[in-house]
Length: 242
Image 1 (cartoon, one colour):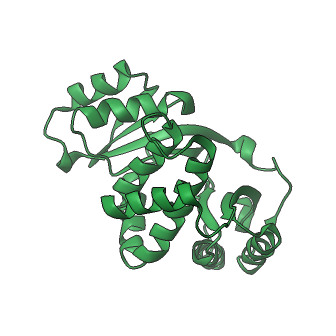
Image 2 (cartoon, one colour; image 1 turned 120 degrees about the vertical axis):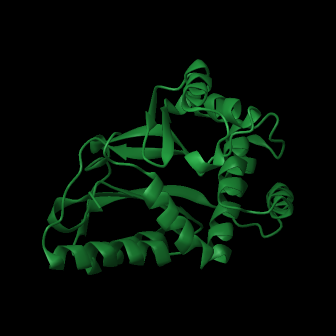
Image 3 (cartoon, helix red, strand yellow; image 1 turned 45 degrees about the vertical axis):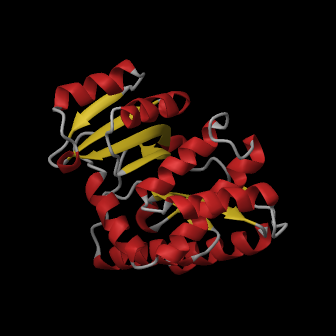
């Protein structure tokens, strides 16, 4: 992880999210619905829901909005069923891209994602074509300015709870875990009153691809913008060395 700090990117995303909070909260509401459907509305017994709630809080979603979303999901008032669909492909110069969608219409989602790849100078591939280039990990990012205890204490809390790695960057601590240990590590930090800038299971690239031409940079940004604008798209992972 060293040399590829996630915090700057997370702050960049936060700024963009602040300008489009409604869309972000809608996306998180869908994640709540899927989690509630899978394990029920009680976070005490539904670990997946606890993780989604933590993600909601790191995105500044108000508690009453979270509670309403859980109740709505439990009652499924709209009768809409969302499913997770993953697409893989290549951006300009072979940048590996994974797109996770949460959609009630697979055909629409696939068409929109394919269109984004095409307009962004890339192409959608088959399942598995790039995912082998990523590791699925729990990733917790902590803003150093938000933590009162010292680095060693934060590190020991994380490692004792089962974290795989702890990295101190210039302005953040970045903790990686096995996906199965993510909840335990996140909850251990939460119990100590440590706030998190980001906490989620994500896909971390094994290697990074640098884009050198102005044309490739424009195309890659267009691809990411089109995917971000798509209401069905929840997460986009790539190995572009920004």
